[in-house]
Amino acid sequence: MQTFGIFSTNFDHEYIAKHYIYINEKDEAREDIKISVDDLNKLLKKKSKNVAGTIFLYNPTMSPLGYDNDSSLAEQGFEFCDEFSELNFNDMINLFSKAIRDGYRGKLIEIKYLFNLNKANIEPTPILEELDSDLDRYNSSQLTRYDKNLNYTDYLTMSLNGKFVYFGSGHKYDRHHKEIINYARNISTQAKKLGKEIYFTHDNNYDPDECIDLAYFLSPLAVGKIKEKRINTFKNAFRTNPPTIQKISF
Image (cartoon, rainbow, N blue to C red; front, side, top):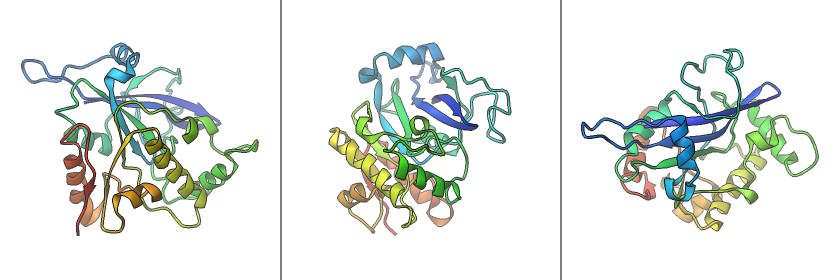
């Protein structure tokens, strides 16, 4: 698997503007056939043919090859040029590379986020208060802390390619962050209105229809006792193309 992204910056904040993973085809020796950024751009000219679907996550922590996440990309001398860069793997992409294989080879999957802010550990932090406040101002003329276009998804104009949307964007929202809850719910509801098949992992708390209404989508990654269960259910979901809804039982 390879992963590519475009980074943007505004007011010292850094965002992933676009992010795709590519599931490589194999050569006769069963080695991955790598693609270049030019190859990626050619594939993206025919999205309807080459993009299998979309995976929604919470927020990114990514870096281009040759850089890391120990400091901001600007501090490392990265040039923001609105072009794709091949990216390093993180824990989430490592999981994808092991789980998303046969049935997806030669295809792209777009990775979208509730928040495009490229920063680790924003949940729970004071940043959530800022995000919630931003979303309260989003449809007004008021200024926001984070860039309206770069950080947030306008669900009413949201474009989704491919046949499916898999939500792994999380489920633990503080009750007083009402704007974040509404925002996450609007995205999942709109995806269904756009005619996309919706897939995710859930548990005994809610049935699938309730999960879509509540934006209750378990992340593929977790810690502690449930770590392996989350990983295995994600792998099970992507044994087919399109994926399937999975339920974790405890």
